[in-house]
Amino acid sequence: MAGESSGLGALACYESSSEEEGPSPSKSLQQQHTSTGTKLSRSKQQHQQEDKDVVTLQNCKRKLDNDDEQSLSFGKETKRTCTKDLEKRPQLPSVPADILQMFSDKRANEGRKENPEEHGGRIRSFPHVAGNWATHVYVSFEPDADFTDGVKHLLGCLETEVQLQQVEEYHISLSRTVPLTFHWIQPFIDSLRDTLRHTERFFCTFHGAKLYTNDEKTRSFLGLEVTGGHDHLLQLVQGVDSCLEEFRLQKYYKNPSFHMTVGWCVGDVHEGTQQFNQKLQASLSEAQEEFPSLGGFLVQEVKCKSGNRFFSFPLR
Image (cartoon, rainbow, N blue to C red; front, side, top):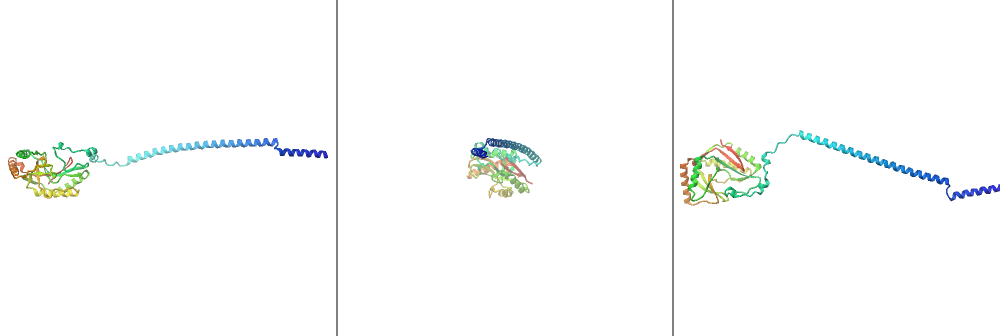
C-alpha cells in the first residue's frame, strides 16, 4: 500500500508538473481552432460590411440618377410652363420707328464735322449736338413766278454794291432757330397748335428793303420790310414765345423788325451809307411797279421746321 501510495503521489506530482510546464496538446488544438474561427468570423464580417458598402453606393448612385431625371423632368416642365405663360401674356405695343431711328447712327452724328463748303459757306448758329434738332417757327409763303422774277430784278440792281444769292424758300420768321431735344418735338408742336388754333388770316405788305446780319455776323441778308400786318405778326410772336418759354428755349427779339428775306451772302456786308440805302429803296420801288407780287401777300398758315420734319398750322 505504501508503494502504491508513493507511486500515485509520484504520478500526481508528474501530472502537476506537466500542467505547470505548459498546456496540454488537446487544449492547444482547441485554442488554435477557436482563434481560426474568430479570424474567419472577422473576415466574414468584413466581407459583409464591404457588401453593405457596395449596396449603399449603388443605392446612392441610383438615387442620384433618379434625382437627375426628376430635375430634368422638372426643368422641362418649368420651361413648358414659362413658354405657355409667355404665349398667354398680352403683346406689348411696338416701339415707334421715330424712337428706334433716333440714334440709329449715333457714332456718325457724334463724330460729324460741319463742312461749310457743303452749305454755300454758311456756318451753324450753334454747334451740332446729337439728339438736338434745329427748330424754327415762321410764316410760310409760296411765291408765284411774278414774285421770283421781281426778286431777281431787285438783286440785279444791287450787283455793283453787293453780290447776293436768291433764296430758295421765302418766309417771315416768328422765332430764332433754337435746339430742341427730339422727345420734346411733339409736345412743342402740340403746344403751338393749341396756341394758334384761333388765329385768323391777314395781309402782309412790304414797304422798303434793308440789309440784315445774323447774331454771329457770319451771314448777311436782304429783306423786304413788313409794314401792313405788323401787329398781327407781333401777336403771333407772343404766342410762339409762350411756347418757347414753356420748353426753356430762347424767345424772339424784343422789338422784331419783321421782314421777308429774298437774298443772302456769307459774311457781314452791311451797307450803312446813305447813298446805298437810297439806291436800295429806289430799286425796290421800280421792281414793285413792274412786279406787283412784291407788294405783299395773304398769310394763310404758320409752319415749324424741326430738323428735316415740317409741321403746318393753317389759320382760320
